[in-house]
Length: 265
Image 1 (tube, rainbow, N blue to C red):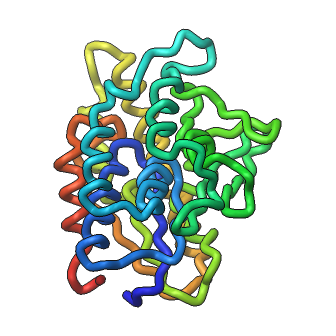
Image 2 (image 1 turned 90 degrees about the vertical axis):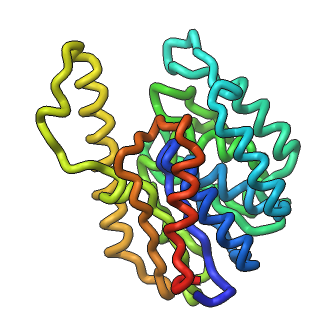
Image 3 (image 1 turned 90 degrees about the horizontal axis):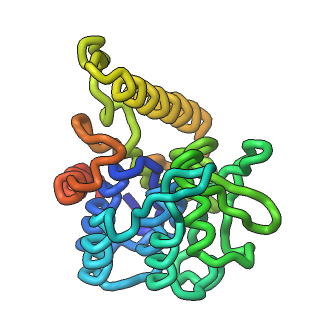
């Protein structure tokens, strides 16, 4: 991989902690991307990387963020299960009043317009706080509240572009893309594993699998239509982990770290 490259980080909930391991590997090899494009959890990791912190400070932030109870609180709103206030407070501590145009590394954050499903790419041309763009990119409908920006409502970017490789600015350079929601992140289907005494649990598990399969299908199309430079695609093997496996942060991060072989970088 050339030292001049784009970095694309997919969405994936807790699976996105694999991105932290990948970035740790990039730090160790003094590799800093020209541009970062992130969706959902990928936007969080990408935005903190774009601050150009030291490696130790970057890792420290995610060690703290791995405790979901620090940022998760139940919402009493009819439109969401999780209240945004705690996580917004954390983003405020990290990014303060930085706007996307102020970031040391160019970054694009992917969200979805909740009215018409159009993909919204927030970048350095937008007068938007980085913390607001991130929150919109990770707001899974039903779990988080919709985010209002510029008189429009936005939700999680995974709906339109979970692996946004087709939104890089410079198509002439290498693109390193980390897809944590690939087929390698999902176990082969076994009907016996979807039978429970409580049918609600079985329904939730089936819906979660459906969402992941939709992301896989969407990403296949994105790869098929990719017309940029050399695409270096890394799909960490995350079978056995769920998008809600936040308590397994260290194991997921380590898999991400090991997924970047010396031959790639």
